Structure formats: structure tokens, C-alpha cells
Figure 1 (cartoon, rainbow, N blue to C red):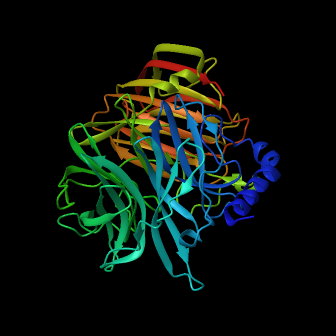
Figure 2: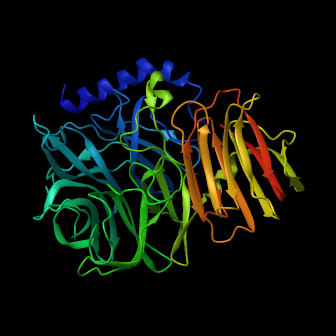
Figure 3: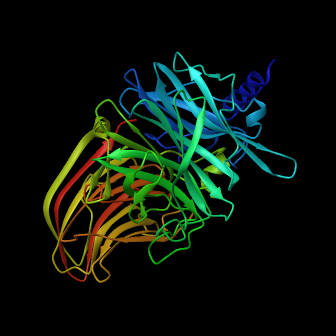
Length: 492
């Protein structure tokens, strides 16, 4: 038995042994991608080929803590109904002994090709990183390239924190952006170029902490992604080591973007300010792809590194991916919207309109639940605070609140009474708060809240009691009008 077969057998045995325990957990999500057991983190290899969307993810089957990483694999024709496929990559070669780390996928003349980081550590924890290829003709079975690794460690001037390649084609050439750390311990996004995916040349630094007028933005940049949106180049990256500034950068690590223009000769991105992608508690390592409909789609990890104390751990699994989102660029700001295909899940529609709420909390008949979509549009009169209480218990001790505080001019997500797990509050400002539209996707242990058609998004895990299913609409110290309310249960 070779090393690959041995590792895969161990992984499948672990899945089979624990599947009943995992699937009995109430907090298992109904329409999100999750690991069958163990730990899921970064989405990888997001691509559409031959009418099917492929999505891979970092997967540690043997524990809910970070460890030996495989690549899990799912596919879908509609971005909603996902089929679990065999594990795509197992860390069986000398250049990946401590994990097949994150990467991307391309269609190379009909061959589905994965580009990923092989991670190696010695007995003292010193790291080496290798960029590698794996190829598939059928979209299921992958063969590692005999010439791996195609990039041996990092260029001069950088540490061995050098990982997460995202590859795309521009003209006749392939380009790679990869996360790195300079020897000054500053985060970087580096650009490489290749004609054939196997021979790569280093072009330069796209952007980085303390480069030009960027200022200090952390000691390491993970999971970079570069793409063109509405004629402009966007760099998404995940800086580690930024201190909180007011309402900004309040998670342990951040995920955000720059908008600008990439010089393909020098590799430098001339860009504006760094903007966070998501205002919630759990959002990291986003990856995008361009589909056949011309949409720039994004999926992210609904979790964070070093966050391992979730209630699901006792049942042998942890973390999930977000629903797919469509990105648009308006006035140099990214707007995120749920993909249109999410409407395929809707059933049992309930609608209300034109309800005045005057310093009160109200409940509406048939508006409750734990797996649903909700659209609520408010018009502000003189209320000091208004919004929605979700996953409310009958005694009022449990609730998750999304609200607008007019005295501060800020949106607020409060999960201090959300049940088990982490608490906290996240805030952000809105460009215009005279009317606020909430589009909420609720699953058994998650919330994704799109504000004003994606101007802002709050993504978070919550762990209320299974009987906490109440929904309340409220206004404090004044009036607000609930112009429109639509609620659907979601199929699963």
C-alpha cells in the first residue's frame, strides 16, 4: 500500500466511524458546505468547468484542531445542490509532508489543474513551502505532477511564509499571486509569470504592508486573489497582525481588498485604501472565480484561524463555507449579493407590508424558524434604534440582534445573547440610512446578512438552543416603518 492510499484509507475510516455522531448534531448546517468530519478551513480551487462548479477546501479529517491538511472536494451544477466527491489531495509526497495547503484551480486546455502549497516542517518546526501541481482529466481523480514542486521555496528577501497561490490567465501567459512575508516581517502579495504552469519567474511585489502609502498592514498576507472587475483590478488578501481601529479590524485576522490597476510588466498594483469585505465575526480566506455567465463569484471560510472553541467540536466537526456571492464594483467599493440560484431553495412564502412600529417589539404570524431567508426593508422616521431580533427564545434570554443605531449612525450585530460560543458586537457605518434593506440567510448555526443589496455584509456563526426560533421587529424611542417583509423557508 502506497502512502496516498494509506492516508486516504485512514481519512475514509475516520469519516465512516464518526458520521452518525457528526450528523446527529443539531448545529449541522442545511445548505452550506461542511466537512464530513474534523476541520474545514480555506476554500480552494473554485472553478467552473464543463457546466459544473468545482469547489475544494482545506480538510483535516482526524481532529477539529488544525493538523494534516487534505483537500476535500464538492461539485454542483447550480451552486446550491453540492455533491460530495472523493478527497482530491492527500499529503503523501516529500514536498507536502505536513499538509497540502491552500491554492487554486485552472482549466489548462481541458485539464483541471490544481496549484497548491506543499507544507513541510522539520522536528524544530522550521517551515519549507513548495508550490505544486495536480492534474485531472475526469475532474475527480488527480495525479500530482512528476516535476513537482514547480516553485522551490521563496525568492530572496522573504521568509518561508510563502503560500496560497492563486493563478489566472492574461493573454498568452499564466500569472500567480501568492501570499508572503518579507524578511522585515511585513505582509506581501507577490506576482509570478509562466507560459506553461511549470516554469515560473518572479516579477515583483503587487502590494504589501508599508509599501508606498499603504502603511502598516500586518506581518503576513494570506490567501491573495487578483481579478478584474468592471475594468479595474482588485486584490483580495487576508492580512495578519493588524491592530483594531475603532469599528475596523476587530477579528483576530482580517479579509479585505484594494482596488487599482495592475502593471503586468512590473507586477505592481497601484491601489487605493484597504477595505474590509465583511463586517461580521467569521469570514476569512475568500476565493473568487469567473463563471460562464460572466459573474465574479466569491466563497469564503465561515471561520477564522486559531478559533477552535465552537460547540460543534464535541460532535467531531468544525467550520463551514459561506454561500456563494456575486461581486460588483460600484464607486471603487465591492458589493456582495447572494447568487440568484439561492432562490431555488425558497418555499412557503409569507409576506407583509407597510407596518408602522412605534417604540415597540412585534412578532408576525408564521415569521419564525431556524432555516430561512428573510427580506425586511425599513424606512426611518424618528426612531433612535430599530431592527430585527433573530433566534429568540420564549423567555427572551436568547436572541441575536441586527439593528441600526441612529444616534451613532451605525449598523450593529450583537450576538452577546446568541447562545453557546463566542459573543461580541460588530459595527459599521452606512452611506445612506434613510431606508435600510436586510436580506438575511439563516441556517441552524449561521447568519449571513446582506445590507442594502450588498453594500455591507455581516457573516457569523451562532449557537442558540434548537427551540429558539422566534423573530421580532422593533423600534426604540420613536417610529420606523416596515415597508416590506418577505420570509421563505429554505429547502434542504
